[in-house]
Image 1 (cartoon, one colour):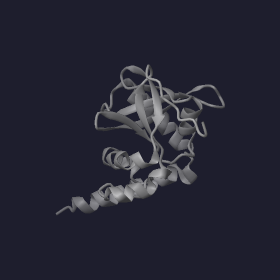
Image 2 (cartoon, helix red, strand yellow; image 1 turned 180 degrees about the vertical axis):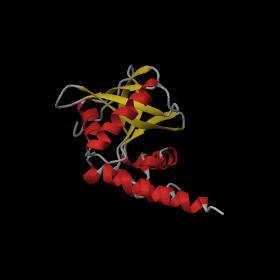
Image 3 (cartoon, one colour; image 1 turned 90 degrees about the horizontal axis):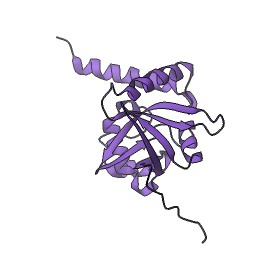
Length: 177
């Protein structure tokens, strides 16, 4: 009799190792770049489930449009994008440099404003994200079924952006005024 649970665990372990190899040092290697381009094209066309989107943002150095695949997390009627690889990744820096101005594609094009949420609000989003995005699990050091308190301990390491319609304005808090 085939032990499917053991096979599933072995496959999950191997995929985790593969994911770590693709993103050694939090930077994607050449194979990851090629795979991401292909996956982003599929997500943009709307072929995949609706929570799989292509994010397009202007590169802060090149000025070119950068497109990458992401998993949309929905929690309490709000939509969120999570950086599985932390704050020191290009797309997060590009979104911040563009003041949150971005485009989401999934069969249609939607201009959006990405608003980074405060660290203390991230834990429930991170937990929901790990349940929705199995590919994120090797990169976020908390089990998807862990209590919310464990997510609170790592929340500062993983930026979370609320997806707003581009017509809304983010009220920026001024420091020291």
